Structures are given as structure tokens and as C-alpha cells.
Image 1 (spheres, rainbow, N blue to C red):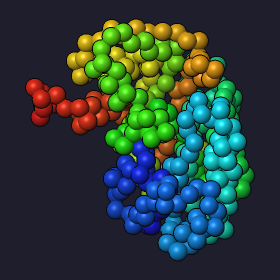
Image 2 (image 1 turned 30 degrees about the vertical axis):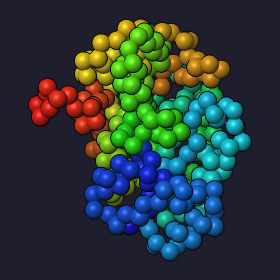
Image 3 (image 1 turned 90 degrees about the vertical axis):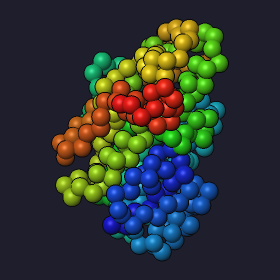
Image 4 (image 1 turned 180 degrees about the horizontal axis):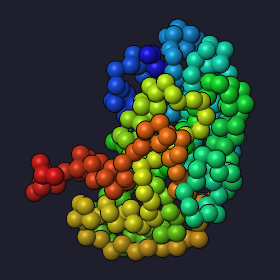
Length: 294
């Protein structure tokens, strides 16, 4: 199978490349293949003769989406719809990624793929619009993967790294640190997500549609941060804070845990977030005194 990865230098894209199970994989960074360049993308797909396109490119800085809604819809909706049309025209399967932020956070059980979206901010609205536009344009060619709270070795350029690395830096600076306790999420390792993605596209029983791929379990960002500091033995004055589901002017879902229903029925399930975090920290921030130990 031949696969084109758009956004291959990013946080998820780089792990998709690293964990390639043996496909003929063509890696294109966002600089090499602009998601808004319809003619360029069409020509590249045709020239490479791929079976799958995996699009990891998006405008996912939540605050900037509020400030630049036009750009958010251009990248997260219009460009994804155009990509879906191109894939349909060339008989290629497309996988693109969405977010837990398509939900409003008004329920206290994990959201399944069948639950009704109700986004609270431009980012979530633009991603949901992208889902709907892509599936409307090419329903038999489009697979949507919703995920949550990604952390990986490459970090997210638009966010200045990832949540884990930024909290480690905060911890080493010392002082008092306040972290949201009101948002309940399912943090997800791009290492585990990339393995699951490859399993999904390689599964002959998988059908186009929506899949939730996340590390199992749930926690608040405060609990996630506490687990980071506990593992690395960082002593800091960490305080939980209830921001009422807001970050500045941006509304965020207070509960956005996703339930992996569709992929699990195919035997695809990610490990618990605690296990994923320990593996990530052990690789990225090994402690000299315990290096080499389990």
C-alpha cells in the first residue's frame, strides 16, 4: 500500500512516519505541500499514485482561531473539503483529523461517535464544518479521526511545543503553578495514535466514517500535570484552579472525553493515558538515577 502523509514534519505526522509498518510512505511537510494549493495537491496525489492520503495539517491554535476565523475555516473546512473532492476524483481514500472540541461538554460520560456535536468556539465549529463538508463531498472516501490532547516528541509548532514539555519547563522554573481542574479530557500520545491509525487504514473491515482514537481513561489537566511532576520527581507548588470552562475569552468543553467505539469493534484500542505518559517521559526526560529501570 502506498500512503501520502501531509504535515509529515508535525507532531502527529512525524510519528506516523516513524511508526510506518512497512507501507510505501511519501512524507510531505506543510511547507512542501500547502493544504490550500488545490492544483499542487491534486498533481502530487496523481503523480505518486497513492492509495491513502493522511492529512494531519490544520489550524489548531484555539485562541488564534477566535482571532482569525476566516483562516480557521479556510484551513479546517474549505481545504479539507477540497482535499476530499480530489481524493474522490482520483479514487483515493482520505483520513483527516478532528477534535474533542466538536462537543460542548454538557454530558458526564464519554462521547461516542454517534453523539451530537455542539462546539463552543471557532476552532471546534471550523473542525466540525470540515468533517461535514468532507463527508458530504466524498462520503465513500473519507475517514474522520477525532482525538484529544495530543503530546508527542515533535511538539506542536503553533502551540510552542506540547502540554507535557511546557509543564516540565514550568516545573523546573519553580514557583506556584495553577492548572485547570475543570476540564476533563483524555490526553493522547501521538506514538500510540500513529500505531492505531496505521492499524485502522490496514484493516480491510474498516469502513469510511468517524472514529474516536484516544488513550483510554480520563483526567483533568491538573491531574495530568500532577502525574508528570510525580513521575519526574519535580517539587513545585501545584494548585488546581476552576476557570469555569474558559481560557480568556475562549469557551472550552468542561468534559470532552471520547469513547472509542467504532475502532474498538475492529480490535483497535490505545493504552491508558497513564501508561502512555510514563513511556513518553521515560524516553524524553530520562532520570539518570533510574535510567534503564522499568
